[in-house]
Length: 232
Image (cartoon, rainbow, N blue to C red):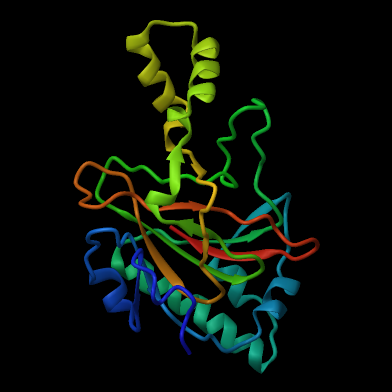
């Protein structure tokens, strides 16, 4: 089945985990998708897991303790396999059951929560891995369809008023509070939805990265529908 993102220059679509982790980012391509049509009943797993507060990390033991139907077992096997693949690769995957993330509404002119388009930053060479098995899926945007929020004059001026320090200290202030990681979509921006069941690798901002980091955001959750999300 052809994906809506398969013709996009930002995305490379692969068919194995090995290709996912070994394919280099290059040019404008900073997102790689292991395209999958998963079998199994992930809804059953979500229904049997216990949500504590707005987000709960689900352990392998939590998964193994569930009494599941045949289709539920198929879904659990996929989750365990993905966790093992990423762990063996050297990543630290976290499986999350999610009602919603915390919102950042402290400032009315700029948001720095995960619902805002942003990039991930790391001091070491790493990538972000992401898969949504149930619920709403994340979006990404090409880098030429976004503008860094701190470069928008009215936002920059309000941040300077908030800072009240020297110009030399201002750039460090923007980094310290992660304002520089967030982006505003341009008027005609077309988001790419990451879909359900595909395992993604997104480029991160770090010193040795050869491409621009991938701009992405968490989705607004559907009412009453929990997300089941693997991320590292």
